[in-house]
Amino acid sequence: MGNKLININQLSEKIGLKPKTIRNRLYEENFPLKPIKQGGRKNFWLESEVDQYIEDLRTKSHAQIDIGNAA
Image (tube, rainbow, N blue to C red; front, side, top):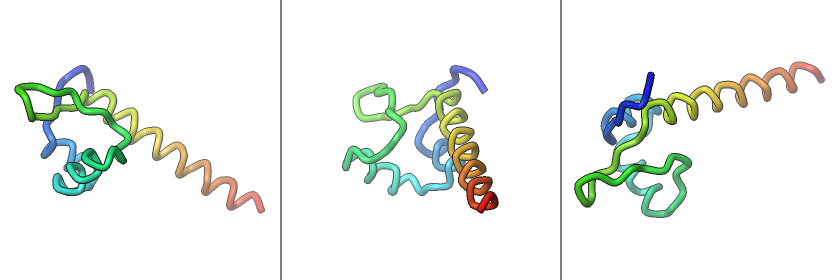
């Protein structure tokens, strides 16, 4: 974890979406993580932001499970 930049293939591996899906969502402005542009068309993401996004999803998912079990 850190301020390392990761490319779309590394992002794909971390979040489980194909690069094409990520590109489509970026084009549609429907992707929660904003890329950092490098070299014109190349997109990179801060690994720390990606890891935080994944952790936030886990936390949200667990909170929904806990709410469901409370009923």
